[in-house]
Length: 174
Image (cartoon, rainbow, N blue to C red; front, side, top):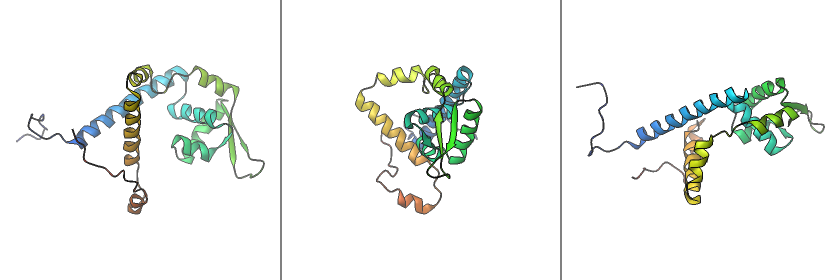
């Protein structure tokens, strides 16, 4: 008997978990390729662009609000802001009301970088998405959001009970 997996036969059941793992791997690979392309074109990493976009969308904002908006840990956001500040694209300053709170705003260089940066998903994805019906677009967004939620690392078994919103994994039907 061989140690290598064999190709599924026509009557063999398809393992949905294996299919999901392959699809998630392809998505991760595509994000990695796009991230390198964006870095080559702009000199910015994907997290740096996400943080700049968050600041633009939220206005003068606290680092904790950016952290929530871009789904990055606060220490990661601080490290990204260190680099953006060194590049002159963002400025941090303490709140005049509560000195413990740090706010961030874009500089002209940050606004310029955003105005010339390419889309994060790429033209191929955007045009493919546009060809889908609005219902299919919404279903895809909901499915990917659910996948991301399910893949998030849980800190304790109790946290699964806290998140029971009826979105527990269900068998995948063909």
